[in-house]
Length: 387
Image (cartoon, rainbow, N blue to C red; front, side):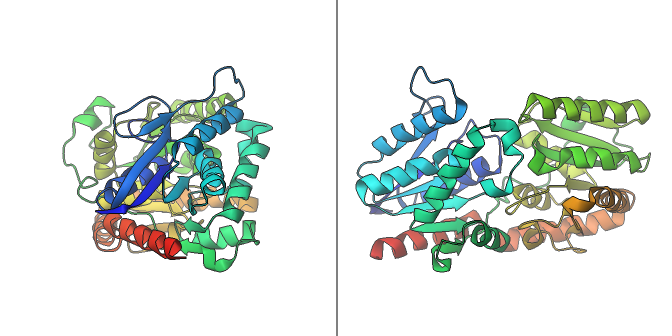
């Protein structure tokens, strides 16, 4: 361990409180960084033995201001670190303040961009202006901005043209292919009432506009009757979105069989088994920096049907490890039609699904590794500290 390099990793999510791709990223990055540097993880939420937890100041009611108060606690706690590395707007302000207070480099990893997520105003109201401000001030001041894909690098440059291009570095997400591997067991399928004599397509993700679940549900009316649709979808952003999804699912269930919805965020082993037996994993995201969900599917040896947004084309090799469907927000009906066609093609062709799944597993193993991600990250730290 290079013990003289003291790094404070700042995040909202950290095990066991992980609900999205950014949290998954931080979990595995921290695991691989720990042997390489003197690492301390600062997170938000309940106390846990693996990280320093920070909570909002008492008496605050506004959700975003509560987050900012936890950021103040984080910034206060990292005195003595050589470098801070923040993830998502929930922790970016802490990194920015620490950099100013202690005169140390702030690295921030971009998992998404607030300017590209206007639907957040539905979730946060006026708080969206605050989250956008926190991201903007941190990004334009950071010593380095890590983009998780080339697509994200382009988005960062478009959203924040004031950031010098040389400050934006691409370090892609990784996947643990020893954990994410095919599981031939069937107990999870039985538990959730999946008919193993029929092919199925699975969606895994939070109920958020970004992940495109309502789009998939509208497309699903054109799925072949023999195919099942399995939804592992929970943690809705808003009550309104939850109601919309509930209505769409109910409509599908009333018109066809084989629509199964697990509203809880299932544990990783259960999701791995569900992906393993699926003909395809559907990822209809309308915005996706890289798309860890696709890497996870490929590692489980499952074909992917995904939109071609953001960094997804850097993960999914169209026609080899899955199928990319062009997304155009101005022509959503056309996207739904082509999405249904792509899903039907792989759902009804077991040979095609198996070939794409095998190719996906090979690509995940050979091209994406958390060990490599961590080493590239440490190399960036050293470059910044050398000045």
